[in-house]
Image 1 (cartoon, rainbow, N blue to C red):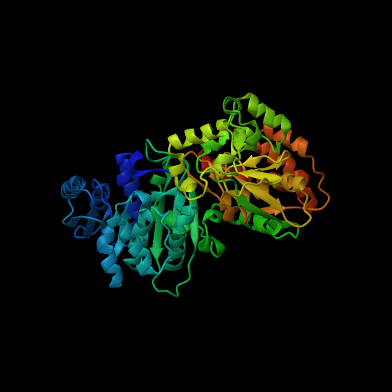
Image 2 (tube, rainbow, N blue to C red):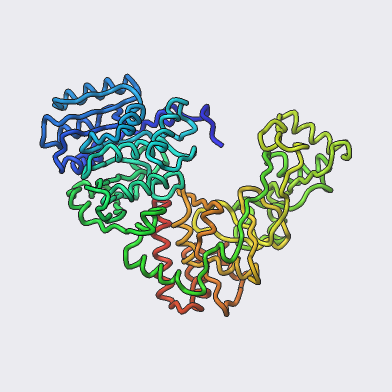
Length: 542
C-alpha cells in the first residue's frame, strides 16, 4: 500500500504540465467547430489558454478556466492576457465543486473542453475533494469506486456539461484503456459520445515519470438516439502526427463498437482484420473461457511477510525447523513452469526466503525459542497491523493450503501457470489454481502457454509504470484457453524453453504444439505471435 506521506508534492497535486505542441494539437481540434464557450477544468500555468488564443477563429470566444492553486491561477491569468484572449475568467478552486451544481441543474454551458486534468489517486485527495468526486458519480448514476483517480470525474463532468455536438480534447493517463476504476467512464463515454479517438504514443510524454499518457478526442452525440461510431485507438511513434490535421485523423480513425465500448477498450488496439481472426479462433469448441475449466484463489495473506516468510538462516537461528514449509511467490523463485525439489533447493542456496512459518496453536503450547520469535514480532508491532490484529492469535494465518498449480500475479512478458510438484505454499503475490472436472493439472499448465491466452491476458489485464502486466482473479476468469484433444504434454521441454528462450519463440513453438490440434497452421500461429508482440511492446513502450 502507498501512503500519502510517501508521495511527492508533484504527485499529490497532480501537476504534470502539457508540452505546448500537444496542447496546440488538442486545441486545434476542438476549435474546429468554432466554439463560443470553452472550458479548461485544471488550467495550471495556462498553456491551453495560450493555445486557445492562437488557434481559435473567434477572438471573442468565452473561456472559463479553473485552477486549485492561487500561484498557478495567477500564472494562467497572465499567460491568457499576454496571449491576447479578450474574454476569459480563471477561477480559483476545485472545478468539481462548481461542476456538481451545474450537473444537478442539467446544464450544458460549454461547446468544448480542453486540458490536462490532475492525476491524483482518490486516497490522496483531501476529504472535501473526495466528496466532490463521489457526487459526480452519484449525480450521473454511475458506479463509484475508491480506487478511482481525479482525472476520471473531471472527464465525466466535462462530457456531461458539453452541449450536444460539443468536443472534448484532453491529455490523460493511458490507463483509461484498461484499468477497472475507469470502467464507469468508458461506459459513459460509449453512451454519450458519437465517437471517441485515443492517440496512443509509444513514448512517455512527461519527463521524470513512468506514467504513460494519451490524447482523448471525444465528440458528444447530437441526441441520445444517434448511433455511436465506437472507440478508435491510433498508435503513433514520435511527434510526426503533430504535423497532421487533427480533424482528418479523427475522421479517418475506424472505431470498434459492441463489447469494446461496453468493457475495456483494449480490443480497439486490434486492426479489424486481426480482431476478426482472433474472435474466430476464440469461438472454437476446444477454446474455453478460463472460468469453465479452472478456479483461481488468492495466495496466503499473512499481513507480515517479513515475519512469516523466512530464509534458512532465520530458521536455523530460531530453531523453527518443525514449523516451516516450502513456499514460493516471486518470478525469480521459478523461472520456468515447474516448481520441484531442485528449484526449491536452488532458491535455498541463493538465500531466498523459501520457508513459510505455520503456527497454529496457542502461545503456551510452544517452546521458548518459538515464543521468543513471536515476541520479536510483537516488539516490531506486527501484531498491530490490520490483517494481524483482526485474528486471534495474531500469528495464526488463515486459509493456509497449497494447490497443484500456482500463478504469479504479475509478469513482464506473458503470464504462466506453475506446476507445484512439492505442494509449496504461495503468498498473495501468487494465485492458487485448481482445474475443474477431469482436466489434468500438467495439461492445463502446458496449454496455458500459447499466443491466444497471452493475447487475452493483454486484453483483460492492467499495467502500470514500467509496463508490468497484472491480472486479478476476475480478469483471469475471462482468459481464453485452448485445451484440445491429442496434445502431447511435454512439460519438461516447455520448462527448459521458458528458461532459455525469448517469450516470442516460446509462444511460437508451444503455441503450434497446442493450436495445431484446433486446425491452426504455423502461419496462423505466427500471426498470433505478432499480434501479441504488438500488445506487449505497447505495454512496455518498446
